[in-house]
Image (tube, rainbow, N blue to C red):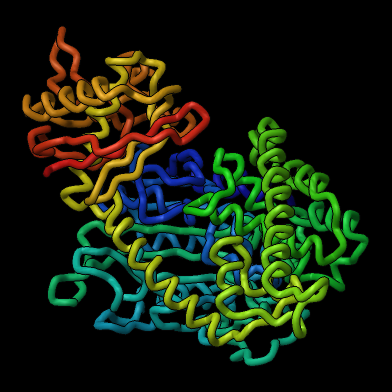
Length: 606
C-alpha cells in the first residue's frame, strides 16, 4: 500500500461520517511566534478548540505535513523522524468517546486490515486530581470483549507523561485557563523481534525498544485548569485524533523499521549507491541522512534559508548533521539523494517537483558554506596550536576553543571530535549551560505569548495588522500583500512584499492612518461566507490554498449597503470588538528581509 492510498482511505472514511476536509496548513505557522514549525495537525486549530467557530463546521479531517525539531537527536532508530505526515480528525463540541473509539477500531482493522491480535491499547490512569479515564476503558473493554479478546490483556493504563495532552504538557505545568485531556493510544506489536535491553516488557506504554509502535492517538479535551489548580469539565468537549502516515504504513506492511517502507526505501537505496555502503551495516547513519535531508527538502520549499536563528538554524543543523553522516560513509554528491526524495513525495506533495531546482540550490549552497566552515575551523585550530608544522600534543584543545568552534563556527561537540580534536567535556558542558541560560532568557522574553493564548495585547496587535495591511495597500496598491507575521504581547512583526525602504515620511503617514482608524472606533466583526463571495467583495486572502469553500472574513468598519468597510480579510481570529480597544499604534523600525520583502515592527496600546 502506498502513502497516498492510506491518505485517501482515511479521508474518505471520515468524509462518509460527516467530516469536511480542511487543507494542509503551512509548515511555517502563521501568527504563532510560540513555535517554529507546525508540529501536529491540531496546531493550526487551537483557536477553534478553544471555542472559535470554524468555517467548515464541527467535524473536520485532513492530512498535515509536520516537523518536530525536538526529535532531531532521536533520529537514528527504527521509528523516529523529524518530518512526517499526520492524519487528523476533529470533533469541535460534537461527538466524543463513544463514537471516536469504535471508528478508530474500524478504521485500523477493516479499512487498513491490521490484525486485531497485534493491536494494544493505553488509557489515562488518572492523577493530579483528574480521575481514571474509565469511560474510554469501558468502551474499549466492551469492544474487545465482543471481538473475542480478554480486554485485560489488551488494555493498559499510563500516567500523564504518556496519556495526557495539553500545550504545556502534564497537568502540573498547565497555567489556569488552559484546556487539556486524557488520550487513548493504539500500538502495533511486532512479534518477529525481541525486546531490547532495559525494556519493561509487554506494556506498550513503557516499551521503548521498538517492539511496540504507536500508530494512533485520540485526545479527548474535556478539562480546563482553574485558578485554584483544580480541573473543571468543559461544556464543549473536543476530539483531536492524530496518526502518522509513516508509522501506519510500517504497521500495514508489518515492517518494524519505517526506513524500510516504500516512503523511505528509494532514498535509502540512493544513499547506498552514493556511499557504496549497505543499510544493514550503517542503519543509524543512513536513517539520519534520509530523515534530515527529507526534512530539509520540505523546509527549503517554504523559502527558509539556512542561517543562525529560528527556522534557518534548524535547517542548517539538519543539513550539517546529514552531511556529517554522509561524508563519514564516503559520500561525495548529495544531489541524486535530493532528487530521489522529491521523486518519492511527488505524488502526495507535487509542488516539490515544481520547486526542485530552488530546493536543490538552497541545499547545495549550504553544503559549500559548510565545507568553507570546516576549512576555517581547522585553520583556527592550526594557527593557535601548531608549532612549526605540527599540532602540539595529541590534538587536545581547550574547552574555551571548543566552545568557540561551537558558538562561532556552528560545530556540535560530536562534530568537533570528528575533526580529530579532544577537550574537557565537563568544562565544555559548564560553558554550554551558561550559554543556554542566556539564550533561554532571551527566548522567554521574545516568545512570551502567541496568538493562540488570546492575551489582550496579542489580540490588539492582531487586529492592528489588519489596519496596517489595508493602510499599506491603500498607499502602494493592491499588489502589496502580507507574507508573514509574528505577534506577541511585546510587539507586532508584519512582513510584506515590497522592493525598497519606506521613507520616514511614508512610515509616518502609515502610522497616522492606523491611529486615525483606531480613533474612529470602527466596529470589528466576522461573517462566514462562500469562498467565491469573499473574493468578489475584495476580501484579502493571504494564503488562498489553505481555504475551503466556506471562509471566515473579518470586517473592520461598518458593512452597510452602499458603504465599504475599511478592511475585509480572511482570518481565523481573535480580534477586538472595536478599534479603539487597540489604543495606539507606533512603528518602531523596518527591515529588509530579502527577496523583495520588507518587515515592519510596531507596538500597540502604549
